[in-house]
Amino acid sequence: MTDDIPNDDPRTELARIERQIEDLQQTVRDLRASLNDAGPTDPEDRSLVISQAEEQEAIIAELEQRHRHLREQLGTG
Image (cartoon, rainbow, N blue to C red; front, side):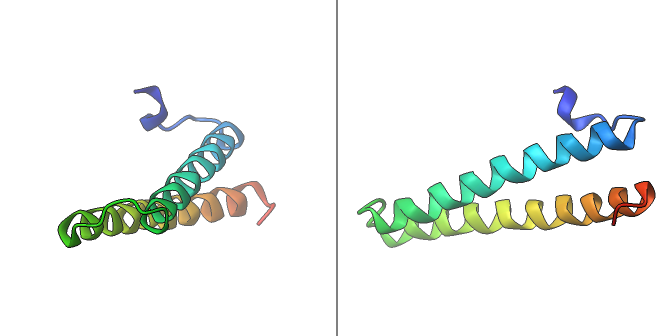
């Protein structure tokens, strides 16, 4: 997957990271909404969905940190 390969151009990487953050945030919203929409009712299934959402949130936090670093590099932070 080419999204995993850092780009030499910080602006291009910044845009890629912004798209990834948006996508992951939507995934987390969808996962959490599924819990409220009579989704998984089994406690184990609910725990799995919650864990998946938390994992995505951890990835978002890492991407946001990289995003801040790139903005600082570009002088727009």
